[in-house]
Amino acid sequence: MHPGNLRTALFNALLARRDGGPFLVRVEDTDRDRSDPATMEALLDDLRWLGLAWQEGPGCDAPEGGAWQSARAPIYARYYQQLVDAGRAYRCFCTQAELQRVRAAQRAAGQPPRYPGTCAGLTRAEADEREANGDKPALRFRVDTDRELVMPDLVRGEQRYALADIGDFVIRRADGSAAFFFSNAVDDALMGVTHVLRGEDHAANTPRQYLILEALGLTPPIWGHIGLIAGSDGAPLAKRHGAGSVAELREAGYLPLALVNYLARLGHAYTDNGLLGLDELAAGFDTQRLSGSPARFDPEQLAHWQDEAVAAAPTPKLLDWLGPDDPVPVDQRHAFVDCVRANVRFPQELRQWAERLFGAPAWDDAMNAWLKDAGGDFFDQALASYDAVGSDWQALTGALREATGRRGKGLFMPLRVALTAATSGPELARVIALLPAATVRGRLQAAAARARGD
Image 1 (spheres, rainbow, N blue to C red):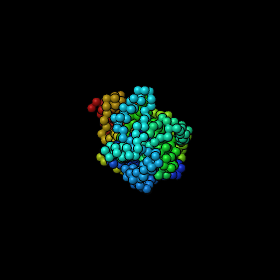
Image 2 (image 1 turned 30 degrees about the horizontal axis):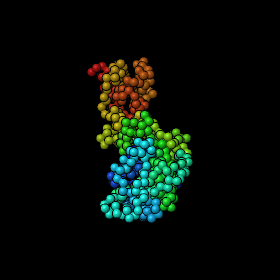
Image 3 (image 1 turned 60 degrees about the horizontal axis):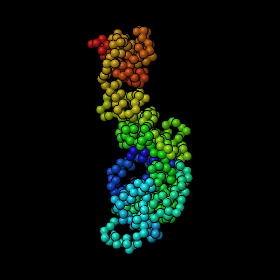
Image 4 (image 1 turned 135 degrees about the vertical axis):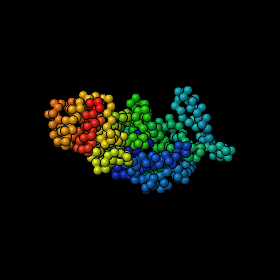
């Protein structure tokens, strides 16, 4: 699942949650070449991980006939026959090669590509004879071209469609599987779906699906079409824009709350700019605030929400980021996470801080310069002050300032480098309170030796 798919699922889940209705998940696997059970289960797992629980669908209450479209073929067959009996569908024997030639000719003539009705006039006997000879027909819906369809859209307002521009369209493929136009529309009606939010790339499907349900006497949902997500260059979102799949973002350490807070604001405006839980996001969700224009994916904004989610995460959640062999003492793990959480965004950074604070210090050339500039006597005095006042940060720095005359950066940076092997990071008062006394003494002694070039 990619960010665009996830945002669509999120908007539907928030709308259902806001109105107290069920959020339905349906597995649309009628395209045999693109449907794989393992992939489908991975998509469902992404939704579970993000907290987007569904009330109807796989693993819970399922509509009659099931939530997997591949198991609903007998249902579709009844409605195909209803359309055929009413003269609203007919068998089409045109091959893909023939259709491609027609479309190419239409484009060359400056016309929109549409089915020319080649098989629309076949009699039942003629169609039966072709099938008997081994030809495999698709089933096409017969469009009444002398109409204009006027429909509401939750996002874009009233929409008008000239049916003469649509042409008869396939509702059952030649291999017998249901086309998206058909199965999606029929299942929405049979499953009692009232509202559907989806990408603008589905807008052209809407009149077709409405016509199918109208011909079958079924009630359509209200559709709303949102703008797609684009990269910073305006092109369709891709990995080069910093947007991996949900599984990749999860593996990198992004928290579910970060993703949902970012995506809920991508093409939708909230008045509350703070980190919100799903119930709060649902309460503030409004289809009137959805945009029909493309939304730009911004990795920096996603990183901002990751920082917010890390800051709000329970300590046990962040402890899961530490590996089984981390050097943090068991009795100090909670204190360690609370000490460094403001300086970490991802699991790797937390593990790096575990090594910096509880492993062996690794000073690079820039850090060595700070140690040498401070001099060995500075760290000798720091050790003496620590022995005298312990981890009382105010008393320690006051005594060291008095003894060395150093202030500001000249006082604090050598201490930071000595204690953390880094030039930035958590508050030193919290670090020195966290580290065992033996570790503090050992690092100050090692810093003094390094400053003298020993």
